[in-house]
Length: 414
Length: 160
Image (cartoon, rainbow over all chains, first blue to last red; front, side, top):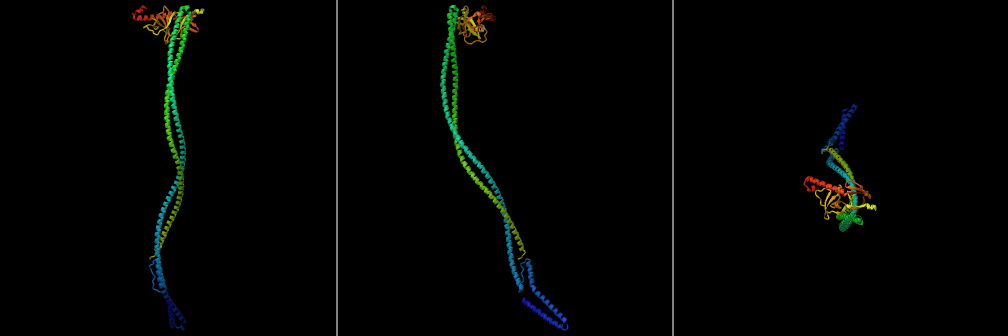
């Protein structure tokens, strides 16, 4: 370039010298100094203008080609290359330009491929994030359900705990009552046994009474027979007394008919009559007494028959009572056994209930912990959901960015 | 002594709660009558016939004679009248007693009762056997008259 410029300067200087000689030749400077001066100036300017024009044409030709290429490239077409027909600085520039283009192509290709990859990744990430979001939301709602369930469980367990405590206290009450029933039943059994012994004793006594009554009855029968005998005897006496009385009356009548002579006899007859009457009166009294004895004996006998019957019935009743008491004793024994079993069972139940209460309390604690944990999990899941949504948003933004990148890179033709 | 002399033996008996008395001198004996044979078509006052120690005695029912409504129960005794009426006996219920009565203060009465006497706060109806027998006789005659009037063929009726 410097060589070319030096050569061009020499060419211009020679042209100026030649032109000045010619002008000095044609136009004498002595006669026409003005014309001479003007002619010199004009030719020099012309030569100078011509040289400048040529030089500028010469230097801007390659630059223009490079600029044209650059213009095409600047529109994205990286397939263009600068022509390398000069070995000057412009040629160096073109070479460097080409190398730069190659490198740029590489970069664009790389960017394009990376952008695609990012886009794909962002797409899949977005999809995954969406899926994960959906899953997380599902998980979240499930966890909320679980939390709700856990709370319900905790409250149910609390309720169960209360009920179980009440149950345990009821069972203890039952155990106490069973113990009481056991004591009472044992006592009842003892009393019933005692009652049975008393009933046996009563039966013996009643039998004895019945025997005694029978003995007394025989005695009273004998008594009654004697009373009847007395009656017969008294009847006989009464008859005799009546007849004596009649005799006395007749004697008195005879005495009355005998008049004064029979007076003493009449007195005797009257006395005999009175005696007979007295005898009859006493006989009547005896008869009445005997009759009364007979009647009373009869009523006594009736009473005794009644008593014997009552005693027999009493014995039957007592036998029945004894049987009933024996049945009671056996029933009470059965009851005692059953109650003892109940007592044992309730004791075991009491222990079991206490253990159950303890277990339920533990369950209650666990359920409460569960509820708390689930709530925490729910909160975490909600946070995760938010993160996922953010992630999804980011992935979408990334996809959009990579799309933009692709759009940018697609400007280049390679 | 005068009162004692005035007193005479009487037989006392009761009938329908009333006290009756009869002069003992008019009675031959007092006896039981185990069997009394009823007389057909005889009036009610005739209780029947009885065998008293081999003698047939016609027994007169005093309760019927005195028109007692309530008949006494039990075995009656017969007061056999003294002769000449020893074939007649008066049937009385209850045990007769001997009583001494002063009949001087007795007040005369009508009908079958001879007199009434108040003695020792007791009222005695003194029976007149004569009037009783007359009443019975009239009854018997009436009956036989009726019988003969109906049949016109009873010889005994005509004879009576």
